[in-house]
Structure formats: structure tokens, C-alpha cells
Length: 163
Image (tube, rainbow, N blue to C red):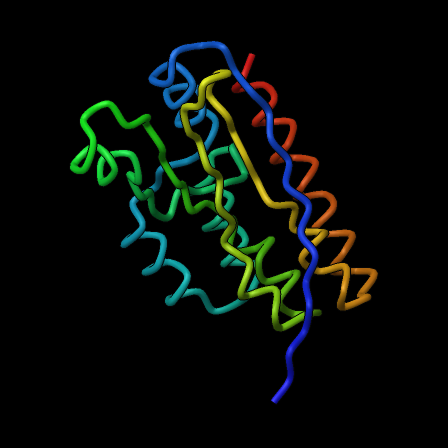
């Protein structure tokens, strides 16, 4: 049995725009491909280059794909009608994920990643746990470089969405 302590850095930016506007801007910044078709193309691919092409086509320049969303606020509002909105987005890029998992198998526990968009008293928060912080304990330079690049892309996108 192994137990490893992983320290995580959380990036968070606050927007003063309405929740619905922030979510709309976030949705516009990520890709929403037909996931069944993407899975079919990846399964049918004869090479990694074909996988890369399928993912590139699916992301349409956005780089991140929405895999799932969880409406946490909806559940909270069943308990209290005035509960704030809170959405958890599971997003990622299979090619980027594979580059990290190839070097650090445990990276698969952290990817795809989570973006939390939630209302608080001071505005709408967009939060993200930095991938590089998850992987730093593993001391793999190449995986950390991929993670750092991913973090920079996600943080730039979230900052832009918040404006």
C-alpha cells in the first residue's frame, strides 16, 4: 500500500458579470463535439497521428473539450430555493492527457480536469486546480512541462471569460 501526499494550487478569477453571461462565455471558449463520433474516430484510428487529427478537428481550435457538466447548484436549490448557481465542468483534451499519462500514470487521476463556475457574494468565481501542482510530486520534467503549458492555456481562457 502506498499513500502519497499531493499539494494542489488553486487558480481562481472572479467576474462581476452575471452568472449566465460567464457560463455562455465559457461555453463559447471550449469545444462541444459529438462525443460518440469522437470516440468512434479514436477507436478506428490506425495511428496516433490519426488520433491527433480527430482531436484537433473536434476541438476546432478551442483545445479543450467538454466531456461532462454537473449542475451542483440545481441540487442545492432543491434544498434551498435561493442557493447560488454552481456548475462543475469536466473538460480536457485526449492528446494532452495522453502526453502526461505516458510519463506519469497517476496523471490519469487528474485529467480530464475540473473547472468550477459558481456564484459567491463577491461575484462569479471560475476556479481550476493547476495540473502542474498535481504532477510536481512525481518529478517528471516532460509531464510537468505539458502540465504547465496546459495550466497557462486554461488560466488565460478563464481570465478572458471573466472579463
